[in-house]
Image 1 (cartoon, rainbow, N blue to C red):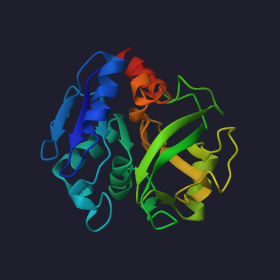
Image 2: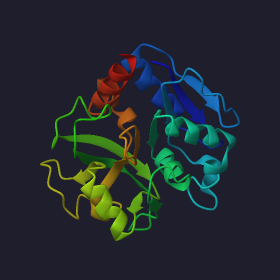
Image 3: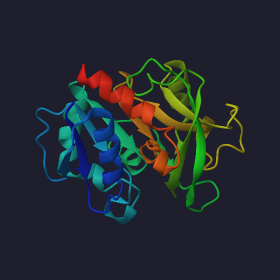
Image 4: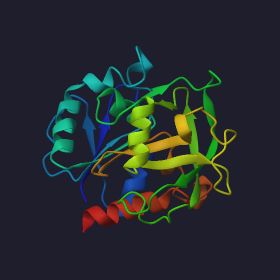
Length: 230
C-alpha cells in the first residue's frame, strides 16, 4: 500500500501518523508538501492533525485552498481513499469534500483528554477490525471539534449510515456527558457516500502501541492497510 501524508505549514501530527501507517503496512508513507499535486501511484491520502496556517480565519480554511487539495478532490472523484484526522477533518469540510463544519468546542476551551468512540458500522475498510457497537478509546486534542450541520444534512448522514463514530461512554451509551465538545448527535467522524473518505476528530494514531498507553487505535490502521494492500 502506498500512502501519502500531506504536510501543510503548522501541521504537527504527521510523524505519529507515519508511525501508525508503517507499523500496519510495513511501508513508509510518502511525505507530500502542500504545493505538490502529483498523486500518481498513491492508494491513500492522509490529512493529519495540527494547526495548518496557525488556524487563521477558520481551522482548515487556508489549507483547503492549497494546490494539493485540487489534486485531492480529483483523487476522491476517482474513488481514492482519504483519511482526515482532527485538522484533517476540518480541512475536508472546508474543502467541501465532507459536509458540515467544525465549530468551537461548546465549552469554548481547548480539550486535551481521552474520549470513547462507538463504532456505528464495521463494514468499511476503516472499521473492519472493530465490531459494530464496539467502543474504543482515543485521545482528543482540539479547540474546534464541535461538529455541526443543518438538520437535513444530519438526517441524511443518519439515513445513509454515514456516521462512522459517535462519542460515547465506555459502556457505549450516547450521552451528553460523553460528548465533550458538543458535537451534533455526538458525531465524532463521518464517511463520504462511497465510504472511501473518513473524517474524524480524535486521534487513533496516538494509541497504536502499548508504550503509548494502549492499542485501541491500531485496528483502524490494520484494517485499512490490509484492505488497500489486497
